[in-house]
Length: 179
Image 1 (cartoon, helix red, strand yellow):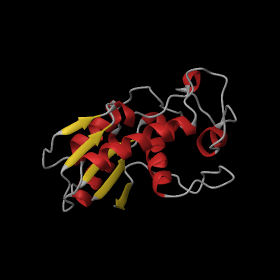
Image 2 (cartoon, one colour):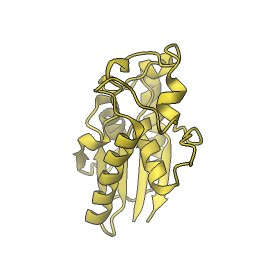
Image 3 (cartoon, helix red, strand yellow):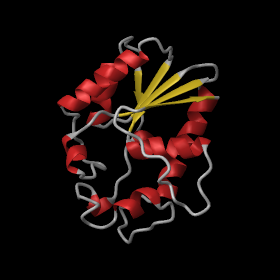
Image 4 (spheres, helix red, strand yellow):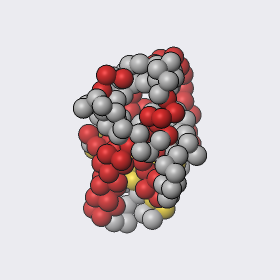
């Protein structure tokens, strides 16, 4: 089994350094160009199933990449994590960017904030299920930066100090795992 994991193309909020979270923004012209380039890189890769976040930026990226018109399964477990009242904020200006994205143990008082352990559990349960149910199939997943990080740490050990800064996915990055 082969897993191809792709992050969505660039958005205007990505350029501004503003966290999208559950804000449903489309990719911009650069993001479309990135997805076109990724389509070229993926054109000779064989995959049987596509799973995609139902958010606009991932759906649009997936539509561009999916040149073979393989049916797409939209799964809410692939949605980017929400940071509650911090969605749509510049987290660096808030002084929280490094803590929120790279400190596995960081918690928030906001009840709507999805911490990293909760995100990882959600994504790891999804991976367990699709690996079990798609034996001998190759899978393409189109998702978000936080989801790619959770997938990366499904296959790689979380550092004992909880610092996840060793893995920072770029827009339209392709990760590959063979099981």
